[in-house]
Image (tube, rainbow, N blue to C red):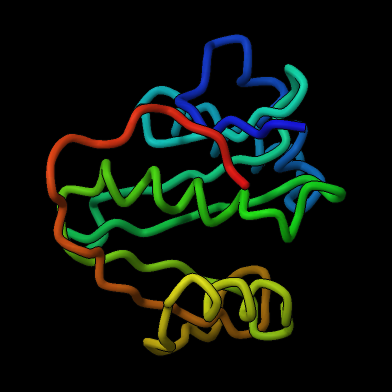
Length: 154
């Protein structure tokens, strides 16, 4: 099945909130998705007409791109979906640095960041959810030409 990474449509907002609510509290998921839809700082992965992944980011974090949420639906993981969503955001990033984070105990997220070329950059303690949040860093390669057209993930 082909997976398309694209900008979301208005009709995708509820599906994005429902997908994010599988990992976050539903009210927090709805609020994050709504704010990122308004700011046009979200991309989605679609398969068979359904949203199967999302990546939301901000650009006001020390002038850098910071990924605040990335999630791929179970059954679509380890197929390059997250890689293609990160690649799409690289082309939209205003600067040469991208940061992301993961909970210290989330081994799959830590492995994913390493596979995508992220390096450890530090951590944050004392967050409301508890536990330590690991910060990952990656330089964005220089851009040569316009961003790629919306395309398929492998």
